[in-house]
Image 1: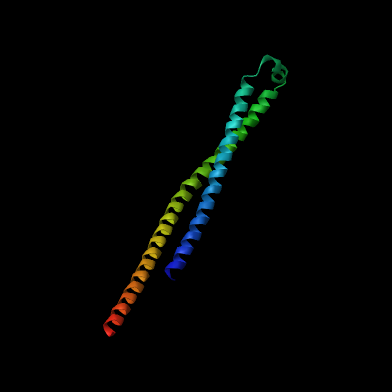
Image 2: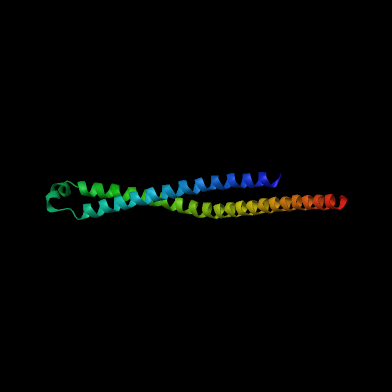
Length: 133
């Protein structure tokens, strides 16, 4: 495999890794927003004005708070899983980025080497041509 192919392959792997990290970060943000929203609803339910006394009397607030608690636990567990995946994925993304940078550096060095070789050949041709005159 030549260095251009290596560079292209490493770039593709980097882009794939970046998409994976971006998806996970977006999912984390959505979960955090939903958790914050439910926590706000919980606080509001617990501090309801006296006008909501009927709901309290029939136990509606208890059922609602139980649902909120259950949903919050579920979302927090999902968030914990996302955070664990994120840690692993970010470490993998850093390695992918390092490989991409190394491939780019190697390809750049190869291009520079080829350019110097062409310049040397051209200089040798000019010298040979000037000596023949």
